[in-house]
Image: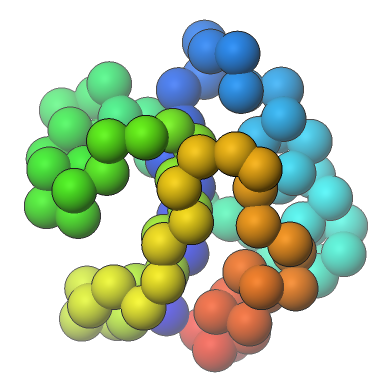
Length: 89
């Protein structure tokens, strides 16, 4: 399982996302993968999964099938996302 958080580093929501990722790591011991939607690979990824709102957290199977997606704010509870991260361990 792969869990990513798609957000723009230079935005009004960046501080909230950075704090969320720090809390997530402190609580679960796991890191969330990040993706910048302004990079070429980020643009392609967002096009494939129809991501148009930031921040977006997306959980994918190893084969790329979307399991869940949380769009915008407020960010989901850490326990909601940690379920998908735990599946990948």
